[in-house]
Length: 379
Ligand SMILES: *Cc1c(COP(=O)(O)O)cnc(C)c1O
Image (cartoon, rainbow, N blue to C red; front, side, top):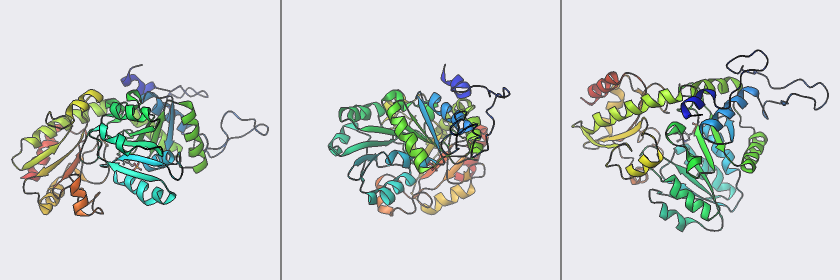
């Protein structure tokens, strides 16, 4: 099955009771048993739920994995991965990463005795010098947020395999439409399904997909033991979202490219961060591991004026000023005052998050309206 068919049919079967084409929303916590232990495969909905299982099978299918797991949020999914570790273990992580991931690692898990090294991974050779006998996990986010850096998943996986370390990739920005980390050597692929997989800004959810049965069993054990599952209604919504992932992503990519090119030619713009430009430092890697460049981009304006950038995001009408990304509607964000406000100016500027940086999640509206909106706001 090809990708554009998998999004609709992957891992799915019609409802056995009445032939419903979409799986029913099994809004139930428990299941009748005819005799103790005599059930139809479902006992309690923290452990299993038919609607969630249908979604988990779809996750596995689109990421070319064998096992999918759905969680109550992207962070709950990451939390389950870290619970594979024990005190004394070490993690080598991307340094430009989702702020909530950084907070989970440093504010929760450091106090449980897990050590994190945050490093730039644009050059995969650098990773090995941070690896020792205690290193158990490499955490990669690519493209990164908000600087759109690209990390060579295949090169990182070589280091991971050589030292027998798990490699997990946060594939939220790219989605499996553009990039399939398990095919590139990753052990675990993770999603904030809140973003492109759900695609309509109406659900918070997380996903994990793996190939290996033993690893899947450990993660299922953690999911059931810790309980960070998602509900059947949300499972239904994300399953519905995935059915149009490929057509949405195609338009996100087209609109993203048009917006990146418009901004790059605008006299008030200093720099546009988008992996599709030949001038992007890891453009060649992006081209080799991604099928297109997506709908996420960031830019800075000349003069690097904090207030001017705040004014731009306030003036945008179709681009809604909001946290999050990956929905059908276009969103804008000002990292220095929003997502990265809690990081000291000096620290955030080290990774490129300067005062004028604006991040866009380019939606699937008509491109003329999007360009005109940016034009009026910049003017
Ligand atoms: C949003 C996001 C997360 C966290 O997911 P939630 O669903 O908000 O918990 C993790 N990684 C990336 C790249 C994200 O954009």
